Image 1 (cartoon, rainbow, N blue to C red):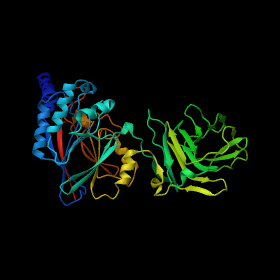
Image 2: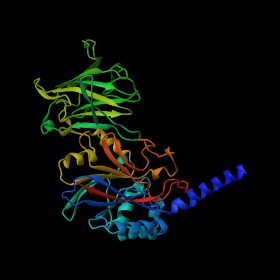
Image 3: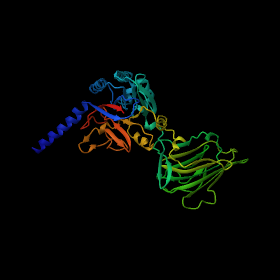
Length: 446
């Protein structure tokens, strides 16, 4: 009797997870405050993770929802195509593009790439455009009957992350946010006078916040750095012998002296709270350079978090070219090469609704790092809602760095508004349990 009841429960769960829920697409309506340039609300249709192969039951449900919602804008948060091979078949790809083109949208359709699509960006662009616009770390201002939307399509793997700023113990510092597989994370001073600089001495505080983090000080193109494969600071092949202890604030003084025999680079390092050494730890001559470095300064980080503070740059006559404490306005003077950061700065104060569309919700961490430079909302997919969610527990797995708690729906992520759509299809295993597919209408209003 007990075994029979257990078998019936298992069978019921299997039928629901493998047959019933994956075949149904819920229509979700969400309203959130967000200025849209007028008192009239702005209507956004959001969906993701379709896994398009053909126009089947789920695709028809998406189209029906779009016609019912009558949106101003259609937003596709990545992984629309089944996998990268979908773009190899012209007929298959054309059917997907035609399907997108049928979705009603008064002010346009926009898509960002998912994981597989990101490997075929140009093929994806050629397939879906012009009826649907592909945004890869790019933006559009969209007008819809007196209302407006500032939309940024974020693709985290191909954009430099913003540098972060913190204040601890009365010291304000900037820190790199390097990710594995990325090139050196660099922050460049972008003041108007910097291209004409002739820097001759640099002093600053630095810290290797995580084990073996790489630190780099680049002055007019000349590097003094600590590589992840070597423990001490070096420059031009010269070794300093100074190994910065992890988590300890240290200081550096770097000097450049051009002359007839070349430019002499000298540097010394010491732990804060100890006397500055009287001798140079690096003393090297570049006979090919008789004029010395020129131009701006940059800070670099790799393989961990590098921190910098209290930066001062002096010129040939000892004049101060830059005294940087990284106060509240520092971002206006420095360039992290982050397209997301640049867009948020350029659109700050816009009367339009500012929305970030992305596939992976991990982008919300970068938005958080930017502090007050925040959009109305970050829209994402990728998680499939977890596919299997248990009452009282939530998603069993979400495939994100922000954690399985952020599975589907609306969240406040450390002050950043985040909405994650559960997607339309499944991934790896064709199951949906207590996690039906969805299409969402987001209404942004005053």
